[in-house]
Length: 118
Image (cartoon, rainbow, N blue to C red):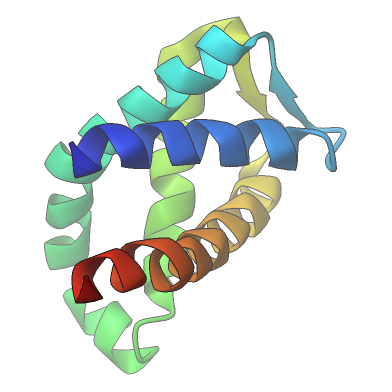
């Protein structure tokens, strides 16, 4: 259930962020949900492999390289989704990865942690 809620939250975040950047394009709400689903699958399958392969760099940067890995998964999502989900360049993907991470942390602290305490 939490996985589906995470997909919907990321879809809403994609739609919100796409309004702020000219180089970030979503064709529809369904594209946002599809991109969020693809991103979650990539985070399950590809992200752990990338983390293991880049572990020395991640340790040297004190974990900040994880933003680069998140940007790579966003670029892969862009390639898989085709014209429905477009990110112009790695730099924009990096900025979007940072914004998504921060928004997810805020949502998790504000919504999910109070629910656990009940």
